[in-house]
Image 1 (tube, helix red, strand yellow):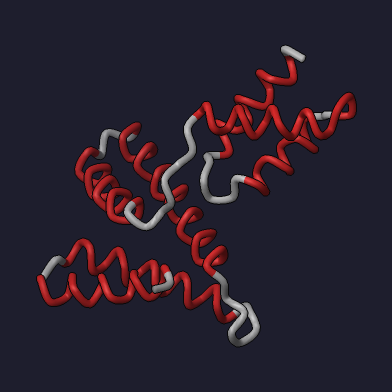
Image 2 (cartoon, rainbow, N blue to C red):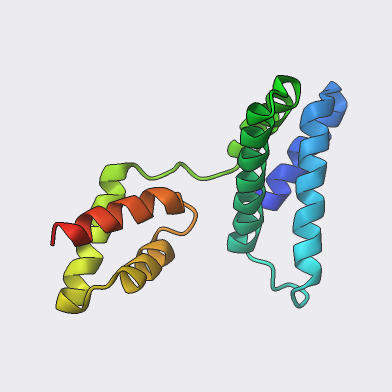
Amino acid sequence: MSLIDRIRNESKEALKKGDSRRLETLRFLISLVEKKELSKEVGQMTEADVLTVLQSEMKKKKESMEMFSKAGRDDLSKEVKKEIEILSEYLPKEASVEEIEEVVKKIIGELGQGAVFGAVMGRVMGEMKGKADGGKVTEVVKKRLESK
């Protein structure tokens, strides 16, 4: 079952159970995916595209939660936190720092002396698409290139 099919099925379950927070969150996610689908040719939407939409929404939610917390709006922060918990169920397990370091080490080894930050980042993010946070990867790549 594809990710979007799973999300649609679970939104139906949320409707049956009366879980309005989950239902609203999943319906919004479905609408974002369908909007992205409109920009593609018919049948060209992939799991990676759905995952990209999901990750983008997660990033926005985390930023919102941070802003609400800074503004002292704990009520809104808690709401967004619940949405983040719901969305995170559909993301793949995030790679550990050790896994990121292994990939970075391998790619720096492949690039040799010509290993520059931009080239390493591009290759690592391509290989770890959806599995690693860009901030963590940046940190590991910088640390690794400085110690080189």
